[in-house]
Length: 341
Image (cartoon, rainbow, N blue to C red; front, side):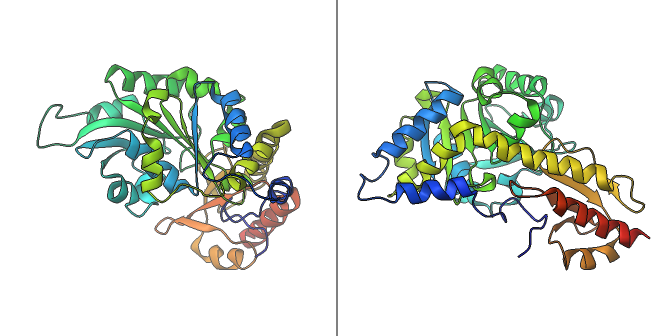
């Protein structure tokens, strides 16, 4: 498949990450997270999120979300989340089936939660007939590519804290949000009172692997059992850990996220005034959402794969990644312009 705009999951492994795997592939090493690579990777995470952070590696993003939320809920409780969130729309019911809790969806604008919308859903407290909200899950960036500003996060997390809710961040693309905001990870997670983060690697140049980071140390007490019971304890964990070591080394994560953001903004500028194209907004992450005539979809996808986000309106999602080049953007934009003539 040529470089398209379908997903950052479609991109290959960053060369430096791939090299880290080869370097870790030497002799024997202790298993199940007792190796030197895991220790070093945990240290890297703590340097970004705080020394109190408890870090656990899992294989994929759905597992990171499910195990994190399972660890901080009881079966009669619910998780407040965006109506368009990944845990609600794209995890095949795994949070509820495997986690045992209920998802309680909240209407959003451009993928973002608001205090007013959350307050409308925070109901029937103490009613034994109704699942009790226990966690607020925030996707950063959102599924619509928008990024919560620091003041927005502060407001949402403050609302949750006042109601004694725990806070989870689905951060499959958290690095993209950090670069977009110009902030370090700690500034918009730990410092604001977030309890647990699902940190993505796969969409950001890794071969596979995510991290569950408990910023509230007390909540991590039994997570090792949750992870094992959920079939997510890596035996050869050095091969996940070594990737994250390289990812944080010399700010490679910034380079990867920065390229994704720059190419998305470049694409936005190239097509936003093309007749027939309706762009949702200037991207603050690595996704451009645009509505195009239905007749354009097939010829465009023959050259550049992408997903139609909404089959009714033909709004499309065009994703950039660590390896997207300016030439890819310009070629795609030129193809769109040709169809508009």
